[in-house]
Amino acid sequence: MYISFAFSTGIMLVVGFGVYFLLNDPDTWVYIVSVAVASVLLTPLSLRYSRTLMLYWFGGVHYDPDRAGTSRRSA
Image (cartoon, rainbow, N blue to C red; front, side):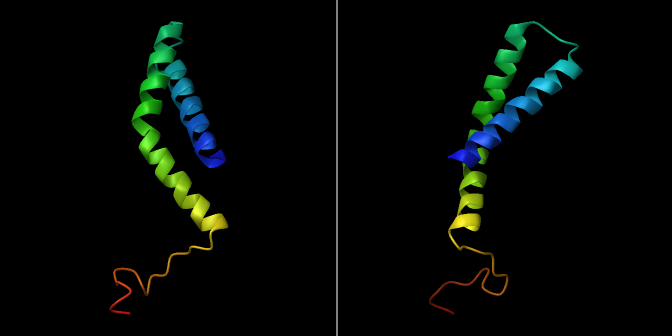
């Protein structure tokens, strides 16, 4: 949960600064709409990558290129 919160916060900051610099400080509703739309659209990716990082850091799951693409039955 903490990792997905960090990803969401990063998305909101990047979108907010992008709107500020690209649109030359528009009205407040433009910030709210753009941050909300970006957050909703990127939520699946944020949750997926946060879960992947959590498993990698704390779950002992690591990528093994030798076993990639093989099932347990064939190994």
